[in-house]
Amino acid sequence: MADEYNSSEQVALYQQNKDIALRNEIVLKNMGLVKTVAMSMRNMYIKFGDVDDVVNEGVIALMNAIEEYDPEKGAKFETFASIKIKGSIIDYIRKQDWIPRNVRKFAKALDKANSLLYNLYGRVPTTAELSQHLGMDENKLLKYMADCSCSITMSFEELLYEDNINEPMAKDASTDKNLMREEMINVVAEAVNSLKENERKVITLYYYKNMKYSDIAKALGVSESRICQIHTKAVLSLKARLEPYFKNN
Image (cartoon, rainbow, N blue to C red):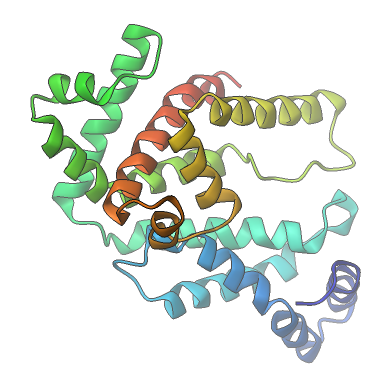
């Protein structure tokens, strides 16, 4: 991957002369960025889709980012491009409709139940409370939670992306806007810190270390299915805590 300064400089030069050879060079130098973003999201599509197809979508997004990048906004090109790539991959995964209908249906029911009970109790509901509300055995619920991990994660990623949680602060943005962005980041951090220890570990390894479920399972000494269950419960907890905040801002 090209260094940050040279990438921004090359993109600015390309926007001046529209030299296709220069654009292709920028793409090649930033292929590592595309692959990094694609691999960081692989748990959402690895059971259904091909990594190369996802990377190809990322390359298209990278080319669009080269055309749309505005250095006057103050963001580094890599930061701007990574957001565009991630958004494009989210859209691609959603359009492929890989997740079986019954899994998607259960994921929506689980998400709805979790939000309802969270608002009712003023806290994150337990697995037992969720199973009782959904009218199913707790062990069956845990199995279904593992199965719908990809769908729940996708829903959470869309929430974060639509609310621009990863969008860089612009130099020309108002002080109020930047303060709101800082507050949003702090709210997310507090929500993560409020998770149970095992949930916090899984979220940290998943989002900050970009580890696969199988690697997280090995690191924590449990089954991959158990990691999927923990991840689903953690993401549901984060969504329940964060959705009201995002809707009011």
